[in-house]
Length: 343
Image 1: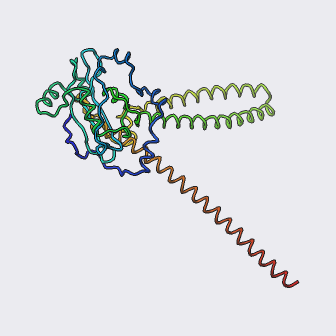
Image 2: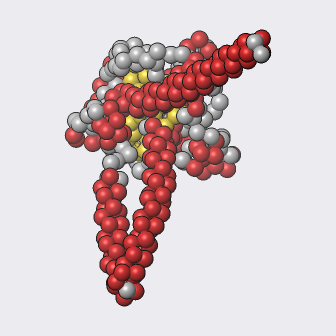
């Protein structure tokens, strides 16, 4: 933890282009959507600042040189628990989204007393922190210095990627609106899938209802109304059983988790966070969030390409058909001229 060499390649590079950045920035939620997802999108009021002792040193700082700002970065933070049982930043990892290189991977010494390091999840022990302080690799100065390190690479236009990234921003007491959250993106994907499935189910239900009524009418005509009513009752019982079955199936499918670990396994076929009680690796988690977004963007780009190719094919066919009509019209006109010349 906190040992990834700065500049070390930890992920396959992604080719940066204006087209790719357009797709990436399209994934940034609107301000109302950020608020709904729990992000802080505006500075705290004086009253709110007074109520949050840990924010008393959050003052505006001079921005770093623009030349160091990256188009996009992926972030992940590990937190311990302070003596007042609040989450406190203890490890900070930042990677360049496109090059896949480590920009920051350092432990952070909190400026408040700590209850424990939450090692089971953070992967950081008190001994790790003491060692980092002794060898000079630790960020001394708590959140204030940690933010300074981040702001060496992140400017106002930098896109910040993470999984449930609002927690990382909160850990740093940092407001940044240009964020892409792999959790929010996946929620959006599943919402669209659910809406499509529900619409398809409604259409199927209409077809089934029509077929049922036609069947009941046929039974009524051949076997009498009594038999038709009995058949209706039996069919409705079967429908209830089928709906319960489908509900259970959807419930099992819904067990596909939204955690970073579950999504990385499902979407990327990769296992992360498998160190057991040794905790998470924030570099590994930052890379996973980055790769999930990259996977999503590649899918969007592929769909758009297929759509353009289909539209181009249809347009080509239409133009060919129009050219054929013109050619036939010209030929007919020429034949008409010939016949007019020989009455």
